Every structure is written in structure tokens, then in C-alpha cells.
Length: 224
Length: 82
Image (cartoon, rainbow over all chains, first blue to last red; front, side):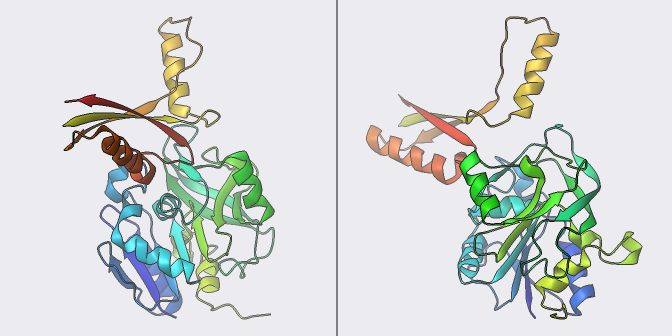
């Protein structure tokens, strides 16, 4: 398995993601700078979190227009798995690779804490290692994670089972509509999520609930 | 030269928590006649053309491609001769 890790100015969770992939897979991801127009032949592409371009204009808006994102879009169309976490999720939405938008948290506050996530769909390449309906721990750290889609778009997302993670009852930290914490595209190969699974992969983190997401995506789960 | 002013606003029905906070603060200042406040963005663009139709088309493209997020926002364009 080869993993490509996208780097843009202002992203700051790339180190965490690099360490997570190294720890879980035993291989270092290939880092790819924003100006690249071609991606390495990777099986998994990851856009980590942070504050690309200082969150200017809208979170992820400027990053989404960089050359490397055209290359990511091509790979996504070809069926390669893509994960965007936090700012990476915002970038995927701004790039039009996922439906909807992320807005300022309803509380207007930056939220940094652990939440509970319900696995709403475990029949994806990213969540096959979880039980359907399983509730896991995962940290969040963001100011703009309030997911929104207009009614018809939201109905399409729900009808296609594109919601992968929901904030478990009572833990929605940002006002997201339908408690949506993460979703996939229609084809199911692009995942965006606000919580940070890369920060919960070894006991020293206080838990390992994030680990199975990467094990699933990296094809490391034993198939039943 | 043409100057363009782009005004980007949230679509109706999209929750605007910042607008709500501003509304609350204005009520706190005693502006009782206020029924709603919504926050938006303004962009001032200087264009190297005198062709109004081209300026309008270019700025519309800028809005759709970057300045506005069409999922949640609308835009309006005002052109003035510089």
C-alpha cells in the first residue's frame, strides 16, 4: 500500500498524519507539495488538517484551487481512495469533491475536545473495520465544522447512505445538520470528516478508536 | 478601467451564527426596531478593461470559481467606470 500525503502552507496536522500512517502501516507516506500537477501512484491520498492559507476567504477555499487539487480530483474520479480530515474535509468540499459546505460553529467558539461518533455506515472502504452503529471516541479541534446542505441535497446524501459518521446523541459540537461528522461522495471513495482519527491510534493517545479507519482504508483488515 | 464591487451574502435559510450574535449585540445596545441582521462580504476589484460586458462576465466567473461558495452563498455585482 502506498499513501500520498498532501501538503499546503498552513496545514499543521500533516506531521500527526505522517506518524499515524507510519505507525499503522510501517510505511512512510509520500508527501506531495501543493504545486505538483501529478500524484504518485498511491492507493490512498490524505489531505490533513490545519489552517491552509490562514483560513482566508473561507476555510479551504484557496487550497482547493491549487494545482495539486486538480490532480487529486483526477485520481478521485479514477476511483482512488481519498481522505480529508478537518481542514482537509473543508478543502474537499470547496473543491467540489463532496456535497455540502462547512460553516462557522453554531456556538461561534473554537471547539477542542473528544466527542462520541456513531458509525452510520460501515460498508465503505474507510469503515469496514467498525461495526454498524458502533459508537467510538474521536477528538475534534475546529472553528468551522458546522456541516450544511440544502434540503434536497441533504435528502440525496441520506438516501445514498453517504453519511459515514454522526456525532452521537448530545455530543454535536458545532451545530452540524443531522449531526453529520463525516460523509463520502456518491461513489464512496472520497471521505471527509471533521474529527481527527489520526490522533487516537495508540494507547498513549488515550485510545485507539481511530486506528481501524486507517487499517480499513489501507486494506489491512482481515476480510470476513 | 472598471471597478467592480462584489457583495457576497448567505442564501436565505442558511443559518448565520455571526449575524445572530451581531443582532443580539445590537439589541443589547437598545436598537429595539431591529428584526434581523445577516453578515456578508464585500470585494473591490479593479479591472483592466473598458468593456462592460466583458467585465461583468469575468467578475461573475470569479464569483462562481472562488469568491462565493455557491452551496451557501449568493453574489451581486456592481460595476462603476473608474
